[in-house]
Amino acid sequence: MRIFLAEDNEDNYLIVKSNLKKVQEPVELLWAQDGEIGIAMLEREDNIDIFLIDIEMPKIGGLELTNWIRKQERFANKPIIAVTASVFAEMKKMYIEKGFDFILEKPFSRKEFLDILQKAMEIP
Image (cartoon, rainbow, N blue to C red; front, side, top):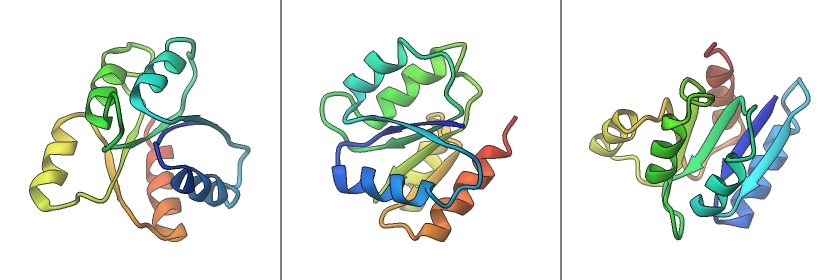
């Protein structure tokens, strides 16, 4: 399984990396430190299974990156998880409308992370 993480905070990257060690199947984690780097990386990728996208990033944010991902035919139906501290009801609704499939609230527990990852893995 290949997971793409767009996250500008290295501590959050390390948390995701640590949590992925609990996944039963082998996982390759690709990390972009912002949306601009993310687009550059994804232009060279064809096979990503799940996207984890931080909403607040410098240069190109998570909403713009998700919009770009959804326009790429090869990624259009792949699950995208919003990773954010902004989870008011109206924000959740907006994130779903903007193309995210799931929302993971920061800070998150290992169980919350693995549960949402499992749900994302169930999307064909």
